[in-house]
Image 1: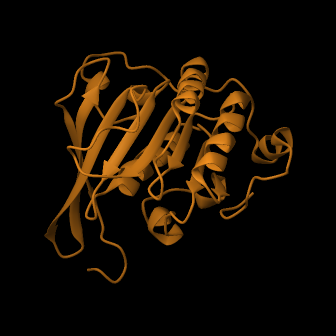
Image 2: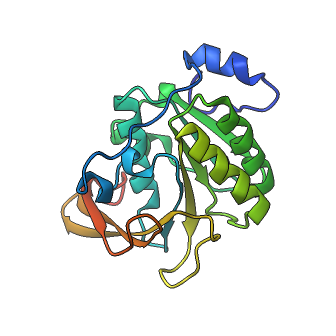
Image 3: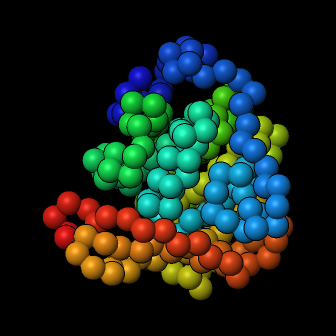
Length: 220
């Protein structure tokens, strides 16, 4: 299954089989205090996460770093796009992400995107689920409760992408960790992206993570 395939009426077991995914896969857990405060799949496993940005943020880059880590550790990933939001495939490929190994679901509304997330989480076959809510982040509390419970049960990192300012509230009280992203140019085609954790129910806010990246084609 390649990038752009839409999971709609196809039976989930058939989709997982084609991708070589088996049930019961789970991300690891942090083993040291330092690891617990690093932006990584192990830090986020079993949690509902919100990654926010304003017009100049880097939420897609932060998400791509997790996708790459998951793929390097043989953890299947699904990326669900709600509404008109989405990513540019060549940019994701430039980070090292294997597009052919990435399951992409396109839904025409947040409600349908959430239903897809619920369905896929119940399979227990993914280590990371990206839910792009940049177009509309209105998730009902009942939906958040189900997704949070499934994330915890199956040790899946559920990462919601939203567009908002730092001082805006998170999408709900069940968000376990929220980070606000930013990006700064340091030279020709050289950028640094950052994520500042402003909410962390387990270990407290106030920590951050930074990484380097190239600029999108045409913006060098």
